[in-house]
Image 1 (cartoon, rainbow, N blue to C red):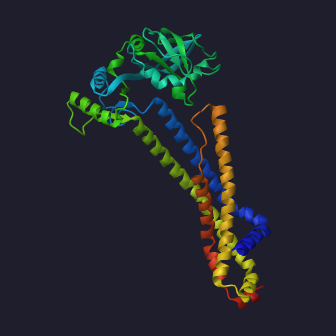
Image 2: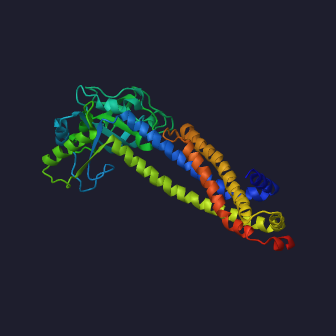
Image 3: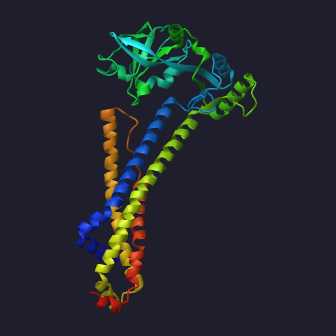
Amino acid sequence: MKQFLKMAVESLLHRKLRSWLTMIGIFIGITALISIVSLGEGLEVAITEEFSELGNDKLWLAPGTSAFGASASAANLTDRDRKVADSVPGITETVGMTWKNTKIISQDEEEVALVSGYTLDEGANLWDEMFGHMLFSGRWHKSGDTFKAVVGYDYTQNDGIFERGLKLFDKIDIDGQSFKIIGIMEKQGNDQDDQSIYITDDAYSKVFNVRLEDDYKYIVAKTAAGADPNEIAERLKRAIRNDRDLDEGDEDFTIQTTEEIMDSFGTILQIVQVVIAGIAAISLLVGGVGIMNTMYTSVLERTKEIGIMKAIGAKNSDILLLFLIESGMLGLLGGGIGVITGLGVAKATEFFGKNVLGIELLRAYWSWPLILGALAFAFFVGMISGVFPARQASKQQAVDSLRYE
């Protein structure tokens, strides 16, 4: 085996240019595979960390049959639903939230922004517990903070939302009402969060002349310490179903635990990764065809060498193994280059995302199983691609091979 490895390496070094060209398809495919999977795993880890900071003791109640948005026919969530949730044993606190796009003005500049209102009960701290870690500066609302606002990060940037960036205690006009800025969110990396404005339910009702309590987009409930969120979720589902006089299975609302939401995001990310990995596999297939073509050429060039080896006692299995090792090494070397470049691309993407786009969720994450799996797969593709050429070489007759010119 040591001799076979030595002969395979010498053969590849003897045909350097051809070997490099043959490996291109393999290392492009492995580069794409490693970079996409590592970024996907990094995004999954980042999202898990974000939800972990929110806490696993939260239940998310939404109208409709999907937690990601209500259908047009879905019944609204109202303050009655929130009161039902408050009465469920094991739930200690609730908060409701809704939003709408409206006109905002600063320094005579007019824009349209997403303004979110949320319930602020006296003595409650659920909202601050959930989103307090996202504040760059300032604070969330307290009781009596009617015309005060927390704004997204983009409002603080010059030539961002407005020509002059806002800062703490500046004034901003929301639909004709002046608000003082008491908090600024950290950069989240997406426009919806970075360009949002948050006000209390009292302010929301006065500014838009509507009752926020009549149309919640979400109600979040906190479960008691030590309680099982899944068990409390079932209690809450029964309570709202009974209050609305609905049969089991006919719910027009959705309740999810933080863990279930994380699992949903994880499933979506895994599907995206599989699709992209499938696209990368096409490049690996092209690389495999390249290896096969190179090995056929190598067999023809070394026909006389094969004849000499057979004449001095080499078996068919020895010739087969020699060419399989050589084709496998082509795949392994291409895979090794692909792993290095893939990790480099992933880290470069992370650096660009954080320092240029300001996206903290975009990060590279890899593990040894990913790297070793990619190398093993590349080696396997190389060996499989060399099967037919190696088989052809092993079946040559010594006399015919020695006569070959």
